[in-house]
Length: 350
Ligand SMILES: [Zn+2]
Figure (cartoon, rainbow, N blue to C red):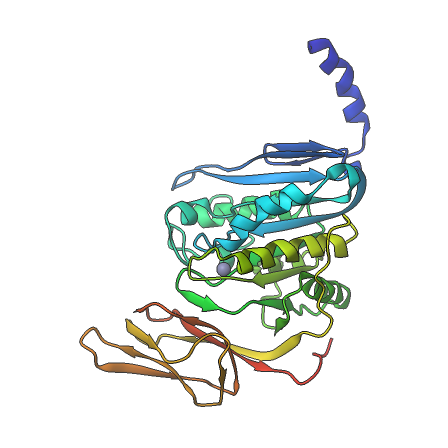
């Protein structure tokens, strides 16, 4: 066997790096027309090492490289359940371009059954582009930036309501100010197929402080979207199927594979949105449900102290729709209780 490798090696080296004869992400090394699965190793620092499961489906012909990132928040299960289903549908021999599937971006949060934060107390979706010598979440972000985002041309960050959040499906279209990237991101949002879209113009513009997974891609010139489908720690078929169908549809949209499209032509756009947060730590009593239409001033819920006294009344800041509401009792000062968005008449400005 050794002689075979000695012959093969010079041939591999003769291919220029950008020719991508082999696409390698962590220990997953896929030659053109093949699929490989392996692990992204995040070395130990002041806290333990992490292994992130990843698959690379490297199309027979060169084309876009789409990264699908599941499970950035470890209690958001729908994308983690959907990605192996996406993987089964992809045939690299018939693909023009490639797909990197990050099956579970945040194993410490998943296996620890943690909402919002990893064991280091940090939100993985706020620490990008990460730090090589930071705490666990920061090191995960650092490895995902270099190994996944830097190797991709497009990205979908797949979320849902966290373990305490009752959420209706929607996407974020991020407007960065780069017209070409923003238009390509908009087309990806439509391709993903969720018919409610929040227009987000507020994300950081400094690549060194990109904070979010999708923003890290966008600020590096790579069109991206964030999708939300599911919540409350559930894996209901409708929510998982929407993640699967959306991913396959973006793959089709980019011309990577002939997968089914669920493109939405005329979604409901939201031009203004606000996360309402707990002003005090206590016991949350929601007064609305997801998908509910609210007027400005509508009571969304109350935070009580443990004895039952009202500490805070949370009201809608403007007329809109409840895209998610925390549906379990714990309320911690500064953390979300509900997300209200205002419906735009027509299409957003580009
Ligand atoms: Zn999330």
